Image (tube, rainbow, N blue to C red; front, top):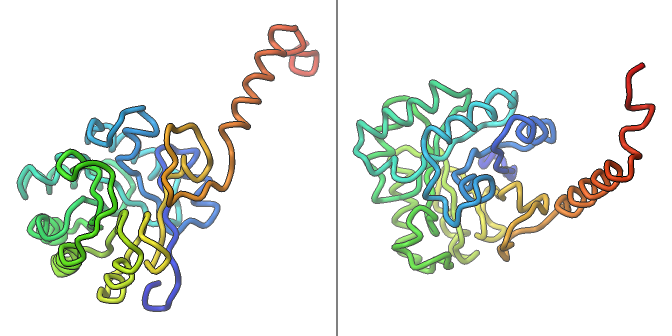
Length: 251
C-alpha cells in the first residue's frame, strides 16, 4: 500500500462485536492495543494490563476479523525480559489468538528483540516517539522533539526487520522525514498528515466516555450521549411500567 501510495487506516478494538464492525467497515488494520488498560479497565496508564489479559481480548478480536491485518501490543514489560522470554510470550499471542503480528514500543534499544522475533517467524511493528509504557521516564505525555533520536530509532527498527512503524506525538515535519526515509510504512497518531497511515483509539473516535480527548483526535460520533440517553429512557420506562409492553411479552 505504501509503494502504491494508498493510505492505511488503523483502529483499536478490544472485543468481538467492535472488531467485527470495524472489519466490515473496511478498516485496513486492527490493533488490540494496551490502551485497553485505560479505556476498558479504567487505569491511568497502559502499564497495568497483563499479557494474559491482552491474549484474552486478542482472541475475541481475532475471531471477529476475516479481512484486516490484526496486531497485538506486547504489554509492559514483555519486551524487556530478554530475547528468549519475549519470543516465548509473543509466540503465545500468535498461538492463542488468530492475530498475525505484535507491536512493541522501542526503536534502537529494541533492535535485538525485533530481529529475534522476526527470525522466529513473528511479524513485528515497532513504536517510536512518545512511548506510553515509558511514561514515567519520559516525563509525561509530551510531544517528542528529538529529531536525531527519532530517525535513529526508525532506521534501527527497519534494519532489524520491523514491517511497520508507529509514530506517536511528534511534529508533523519530523514524521514526514521519517516516512520519506523508510521503505516500511509509518502509522501516525498525533504525528500529522504525512505518515503512510493513521491510527486512533476507537473509543476516542466514537466519543465514548473518557476524561481527556487529545488534540490529535477527531471525534466522528457522540455515542456517549446516545448511550446515556438510551439508558435513561429505559430506566424511566421500567419505573413507570411502560416497558415491557404487550409486544415484548409472551402469551
